[in-house]
Length: 309
Image 1 (tube, helix red, strand yellow):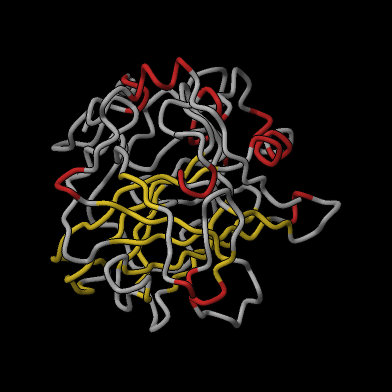
Image 2 (image 1 turned 135 degrees about the vertical axis):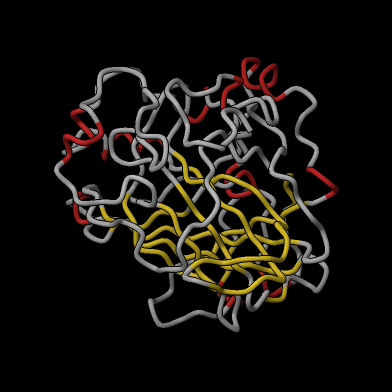
């Protein structure tokens, strides 16, 4: 089942939450389209296809603009450069393919852009913040039996190839109160790989990637997700997702096996950036820099890390 790309009206609750904060930090803007998963071998940016109202093919140079959103309260510096970020964390496999395009050059690829992602595990815990309560009723983070490093799991960088493409091997995230299922993303340019991570340069875009409700809810009935009980926030009620399909970060999701969601999904999206712009990570949605949903996480963040930036 492929994720639905349907324009949705922003609910009154979300409108109040977002308020006037949808303006991109430091003038940075992003362009989001949808990239068809033609094959694992095809990395050309020209495969972007129309899949959301108002979106167009990358080959035409016409793109859908959107503002950056908050990086949320769970960001950590120093993520590792690697394709596989799972570190043994259990969950439904996700092959994520992101294409980075230059909004100032007819949506041409941004070769060398560093794409950084981070997200929670199947029970809603983030590495580095494992004492933060994900809400509802969830087992303790250390009960999953994995050998993952509590400071690094489900975080990583990849550097875009000549076609602006990066790929990650991860799992579908779980959920935590008060958020819907999502993945955080930053796009960096001008830096370089050093000591296993990416250093220098500047952040051009800060955003979040989202999962169709039908897909997420089906996955959350499976193990280990099902051990986390409680109220899952749907897209329409999320305080960051703006309800506009691919333009708001909604992934195109293709099941590996049509009848067995546990086999995993392929997720694709196109992110456009202005390589000359710089983004602070404050963005809009979720009350700007005041923490996701306007509520800082419970629990103690790592020493020296902000609690609500």
